[in-house]
Structures are given as structure tokens and as C-alpha cells.
Image (cartoon, rainbow over all chains, first blue to last red; front, top):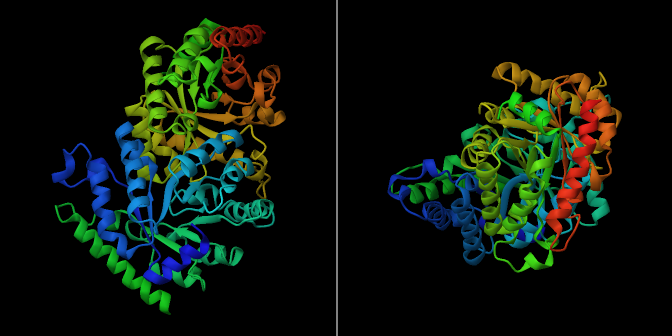
Length: 275
Length: 275
């Protein structure tokens, strides 16, 4: 998916919501728990119900791997279902992969060829050769962890060098050099909604890049605050919500309630886009 | 596996070799290529041939994920095969996972319960809550990326703060605090064989910890140099070799040749252990 296609979807739907498909077998509604194909069926109903209100879906691989081979089968079926029925939705595999060059190339093959997702989250700790192999896939996106939403983000990401440059800034700055080498800019960055003023600061460093913003909802970040700090003319934001939407209800009505929650966020986004 | 059990194995076998099972479907010997179960059969023969000369096996998940569901099935079968036939070998899942607290807990469940591997490699970029959930599993090991063997290790891991502390040192220092909180020391660190004097420096910071050392063989690091810099009274090292052993030959004799290569490394290790 190109940058322009993503922007078009955002303005057409008046939404920059990403629904996180963190489908935990232990949190499924009772009536699905004994179903052989429970994870996929749960996702399918969540997707059908929320598709009008969001532009992206983000399955986190941890939840699928935790269920073993059956879980990975559910991941594959979910991605196929999205491609077939909702080809205009942006599909992000949240896998936070990162390994040496030849291994990174294999991960790229897995996610961008075998599963053919639009985007993959990547951890930058191992540097250039752990990220660049993903960037050679045209119209696919690499979403680099910069400043994450969790408490542990303080431990290393906020480390400063003698010039007061933080590690997360260095990650962004150095990765811009890879963009220059690569010739196309298919990088986005993960920046947590819980980061306040630092989110504004990231926006100054990358005035055009899309940011994937987790941390609203269960983690406590504010959508309005995120937009005030980092929204651009092209929107420039994909804001994720997982638990607050998909687990809003645990009865047979879970999908309707999820749709309602997604719609509430979309309505707020519509106002923010029109400001 | 406890620390003492690992040490006992090392001295009993006079080896601290880990064979990396980076089994790439594109590099299999011709006679196996059309076999439905090629990856597992390749691993099984490599394991049977090299087991006398090594103390650990390290499948890198990237290679299994790249082959989709069949690949993950081969990973599962390989781990089961090791548990059943070689219960004294230390099994490391090289997955370099790292995610926020609740997700890290799921990854821990996957690798330490579902697959029941002894150890998992973990990326530290996201800080405390991305690593600590793995540490609560007794007799399982968390192997934190500190200073990796690849060229990109220079990009961020060597960043220095005002006190000249590098990021990799900070990762080690802060993770020692988690050990204190956790009460047991089940952390090891990845430090590349290609890092020369910095390896010696890591050993000064963690005089007792086991280091998992990739980078000899195809990546060019020297075993003698590694031992000079970082071997302890308890050995304290697990040195990995992947490509130089498992792809040493691509004919029907691949397993015999792999055994020969593993034996050569083991013989060198024996001399180094006796110094």
C-alpha cells in the first residue's frame, strides 16, 4: 500500500484508527471458548464489525504464537481474510523482529512475501543490517520502534549522549540515513501515546513520517493530546487501540460492542481531522 | 537446566559448543529437498551426528517461520526430538523477542511452557517490563542481547552517555538490578566473537555470567581470542557456530561432515579448557 493510498483511506473514512488484534485464547467469550477455530472466528467477527470505523488492523504475533501451530494458522487465516474482504485496510504484523542481515532478510521474506502484510514492526537494537533488508520491499512498510508506550521505555530509549541526543532520537536520525541510501521512504516509527511532550519532539525530527501510536485506552494515553502534538496536514498518525475495543464485552454481543467502541473513537477522530 | 548442570556438561564433554540450527529450506542437500519433512529430517541427522561434540543447540526461529506452518511444525518436532533423545543438551530458542509487559508474559508462556526450551534470546530495547516476565521461570534462562556480532552493532550499542557508559554496558548494568529484584540470576548475555577487546570489558562487568557468543566461523571471529578475553573458571561461555557446521557439505554425507567440523571445534575447545 502506498503512502497516498493510506492517506486517502484516512480522509475517506475520517478515521486513523488501528484495531489491535491481540486475541488471547484466555480472554475469548465463553460461547467461543470450545470452538476449534475460536481465534479466527473471534477475529472475523471483530473485523466485520469494526471495519467501517478503522483504516488498519494490527495482529500482535505473540498472541498467535502462544497458541502454537493452531495459533499461527489463525494468524494466517486472519491475514488472508483481511486481504480478500478488506483489501483497503492496512495490515500490520506486530512482531518486533530484529536480527543480523541474513536472518532479517528471511524475516522480510516471511512477512512481506509469505504473509504479504503491508507493514512489520522492527526492533532497532541491532542496527542497520537488521532493518535495511526489510526496506527493499516496495509498498511495504517498516515500522521501527522509537519511543514505546511502556514503563520500560525509560530504561534505554531515554539514554542521552554528550550532545544530549537520546537513544530514540538517534534511532530516528540514523534510520533517515538508511532512507537516503534506500532511495524510498518506507519507514514509520512507533511512538507511545503516553510520551507527552516527547511525541511533539519526535514530530519535529520527522515532520512527514507516519507514526504508529499505541497506548491509548488500556495504557492511559489521550487521543486529543496525541493529535495536538503530532498530527500533520496528511494526518501522519495511525493510532492503535486493542484491549479497549476487542475486549469491551465478553458476551455473545462482543462484536457489536466492539463496533460501538470503535465508532466512538472514529467520531472523535473525525472531529480532530476537521480541526 | 541449572547453571551447575550446564557447567557439568561442559566439563564432562570438554566442549562449550552450541550448534546453530539455522535450517534454511533453500540450502538443504538435494536429496532432501523434495521431502515433505525435510527440515526436521535435516535437523535430526545433524543432531545425531554432532551431539557428542556440543552441549547446546540453538534453532533460530526466523528460519522456521520463513517456511510458514510447516516450518513451525519442524521447529516443534526438533525441540521435542532434543528433549526426548538428548535431555542433557541445552536448548536455546533464538527468537530475539521483546514487547511490553503483558505481551512479554505471553512470549514467556510460549517458549518456556509450550515449547519448554531452556533459554530464549531477548532484545532489551523496550526495557524492564519487556525482560522481567521471562525471568520468573525457574531453571529457564533469558539471554539478553548486549553487544551483537553484526556490523550494525555499532549503530546504537556503542552509543555513549556523558559518563562514557555505552548502551550495551547500560543494558548489562540495569539488567543486573532486575536480577537483584528477581532474587535469582537466570540471565546470560549475547556478546559477539567479533568484538575483540570489548568482550574482555563485558567480562569485567559480569565476571560470573555465561555469555552466548555467536560470530565464529562464517562471521570471522576467533575462538582462541574469545577464550583469552572471556573464559572463566566455570568456562562461562557457550560459543555458537551455525553455517560453518551445518552447511559444511551439501551432499548425502552432510551429517558426517558436520560431525567432523563439530569435532574439530570440540578438540580446540578441549585444549582451551585445559589451559
